[in-house]
Length: 107
Image (cartoon, rainbow, N blue to C red; front, top):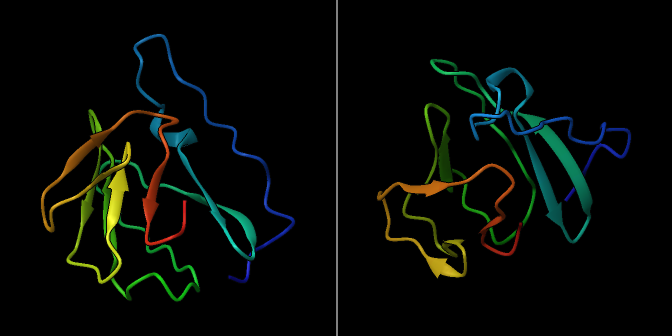
């Protein structure tokens, strides 16, 4: 997986309400080739994150930001797991700020 080694460390912090401020949300990706960070969208925005890994489908999953964070597997070949539990295709699952989830073999 080609990654930007100069990518800054994630700066997101959890607010006193327990929710991640939308302007600070970042996705931290760990894969065989290294790590990378990507900004996550605020409500109403769309951001595509492309990671070159053979265990990822072209359109693998959706991360929805809002009052809560939700991950949806889009029918991927190698699946998506949250908390060690495999997701059912097209069914959104809540993820808490800082919680790890895996798309294929990418965390």
